[in-house]
Image (cartoon, rainbow, N blue to C red):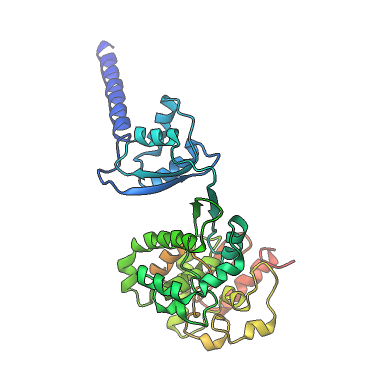
Length: 356
């Protein structure tokens, strides 16, 4: 029994020692790299609200150990604001920065641009939260000199955005996210710069695959914007992208309702489309046969990185059809008859989306 007790105590001691080593290692800086990260803490946030974001940004090694640290050290107060953090900062240094709150700006505004929203929504949001009007947003989007400066600044923007037939020049290029600005007097071009910089950061991660793709960046964003709206409540975006690739390769039209709504400048939740809108040979309307085997002239919303990745890495299949129910579940079919049968099943089950 004495030997067994010694063994048990030894194992406990080793476990405790190992846990301590694990804990302390995970409190150290993620890297010796001094890469700076702008990190925003929204008003009313707690430490538990920012932990997952810290991990996502690569600023901490372990969410679990970070939670233990703030609990053991009874750290409660965290100041709102935008912080300049480094990946070479330990957990204690990050917590110290948050506690000091020396970056706090009482006049700062926090604006969220949601994924899948089009430029009309962005203009409306800017008008709502800043001292800029929607008309001023549209004027900036039509400023050719300004647009040319962006073409020179960003690798993923080219002369395509100058096409006069495109509704809104930067549609699809403004990365949807939550941003903080100094105050309501922020200029439109400064808002766009922050969003374009974020798009640059996200696209650069896949730059090699983007530049080797058969589609241009503009075309990738265009298809991604359609996938975003078609699969907004679904985890099947790669499958949806695969269907669209199959249709393009077979010289079919994409047949996407979301492009037809955009072409008619009607929001998806407004109403059903009229037949003349469905048949309109518009440069955005993929329900029209004149776009058989082609993409629309440009993006129809600002897509998430998930939809962009779905276009870069689509799911290979023999599917040419898909349909979604009111719960966001997606069903794929190889033939039109299979597709029609699934649609009828959803209608009978009360899972087919209808407008009031």
